[in-house]
Amino acid sequence: MTRQYLRSATIDFEGGNDGLRFAVKDGSELRFKFQVEHGDKMSPNRAAITVYNVAKATEQRFLKEFKKVSISAGYRDNVGLIFKGEIIQATAGQETPVDTFAFALASDSDTAHNYGVVNKALASGHTYRDQVMECFKAMQPHGVELGFIADLGSKKFPRGAVLTGMANDVLRRIGFATGTSPSIQNGKLQMVKNDGVLPGDAIVLNSRTGMIGRPQQTIGGIIVRTLLNPRIAIGSVVKIDERSIDRQFFDASYTGAVSNSLIPDIATDGFYKVLFADHEGDTRGQSWYTTATCVAMNSNKGIPIIQAQRGIGVDPQFTNQQ
Image (cartoon, rainbow, N blue to C red; front, side, top):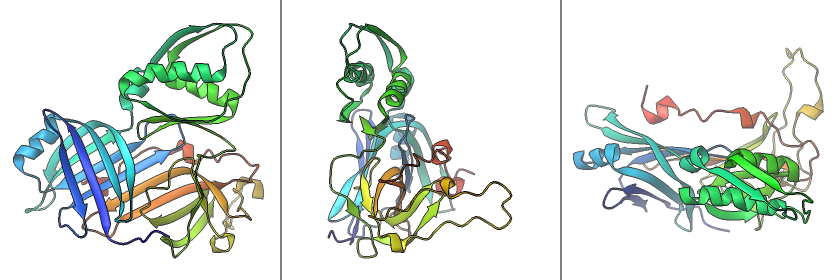
């Protein structure tokens, strides 16, 4: 079991003639905050980053030079990449009479989502994986790398096909046809089976491994909060004792049709697939958490779509941008 002891975080900004690194390790007094949202969806993940009391020259670099950013965070024995993307907005301001801040909003592979266009004719005998690779080739010049691609079957098309349009739209269609979920996570294209997971062992979550409070069964999935854990990623598996999960109850004033089919299952074996993972941290504050939304691996109810409808929404109190 990895010890959750001594926070560690690094933010790397890229742009201009050279980059800039902010690092906190073993109680450093440098202050920055981050709020990262990852989802099992073919739209960009987001990160909001605030760094306090930087020099005026550094502040100007925030506003004019930096184009990319990556965040690694966790604890001393468990640090990993939790975000990598492009800066789409930068600003600066003053929070108190003595505290200034520089703020950046970043998007994971924003350019690839917006400008990755596929225009390719495939001959008869091609496979779904061939289609995926053409989409990847359209995104690769914009910085996307190839991640885990599930087995898409051996079906060969008897006729040729023309792939044209936005690569992410084509990937969505392939996902519907193959029962997979395409997404870009930290700059890597991945396609995970809807009833499958990423390779690797299950992450055990309990009070000894960093779980905070009790997980909640909600209409949007099983929600669990832990101390910040970079291993919890989209498509990974977590294991939660079913006895530690608080059940969902409908309010007595609810007037719609009540059915247990509306509520995601609680797994008797404790295994859940992660659909959404949010990381938040404040190097001088209380926040240092990961919040995951999961569904049971053995459930036949499908993926709760309510979570897929949520907006990124940057918290004004977090970013100080009211």
